[in-house]
Image (cartoon, rainbow, N blue to C red; front, side, top):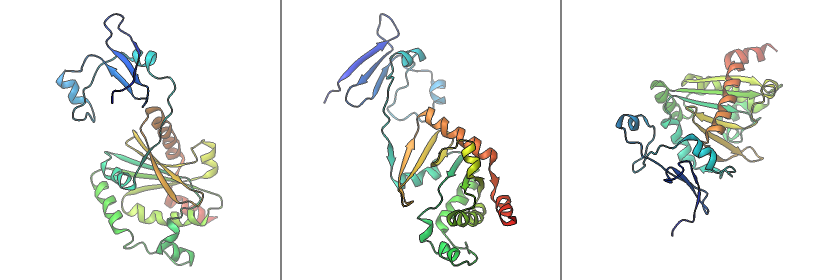
Length: 250
C-alpha cells in the first residue's frame, strides 16, 4: 500500500533537493538529498545498516520543515532484549535506583536470611549473572550504580547496602546518596540504566514495586537529560563502604 506523503518543504529553492516529506499515517519523516559518497566519511559513520544510504542535508532544512510537535510512542522492549544490552554496550553501563523496595528482592533466599537477622552469604548466588559481570569488566567495561537511601533507610535499602558487597566483588562500582540530596539535585524519581551515554533503558514499576516494563529511549535531548542526572548523582554519591560505615556510626 502506497504511503500518504505530505511535502513539507525544501531549502534548495528551485531544484527540490534536499527536501522533507512526512508520512501522514505513521508520522515517519522522509528526507532526500545528495548521497554521502566519500569512503572515508562513510567509514566514520556508526551503526550504518546494510541497505541504508546516508544523505547530506543542511541543518536549517530540519529546523524549518521537520515536524514541530512529535508525540513519542514508548519503545517497550522485552526482557531478553534488555538483558542483551549488558553485553552489547561498549564502555559504561550506569544505573540510578530510587525505589524504597523492590518486590523481586523479597522472594530471594538472601532476603529471607536478612529478614531473620542472619549474616548474608552471597557465595554462589546468581552465579550466571556474576560470571557475565566479570567477563564484561574484564573487557574494560564499567558498571556503576547510585542507590538513593531514605533517612532512616527502609529494610529494602538496607538489604541492598549489604548486596553491594556482592556486586562490588564482580566489578561494579556502587555508591549511595541520601534522598534529601537527590531531591536537592532534582534527580528524576525513576529508575533507569544509561548505556554509553547514548541509550537509556527506563524501568517501569507497578504500585506493588514489580518491574512491569522496560522502555528504550534514544532521543538525544531525552538521553542528555538522563546523562545530566547521572553526572550530578555520581558527583555527590558516596562509595557504599563509606556510606555503610557512616550509617553504622549513627
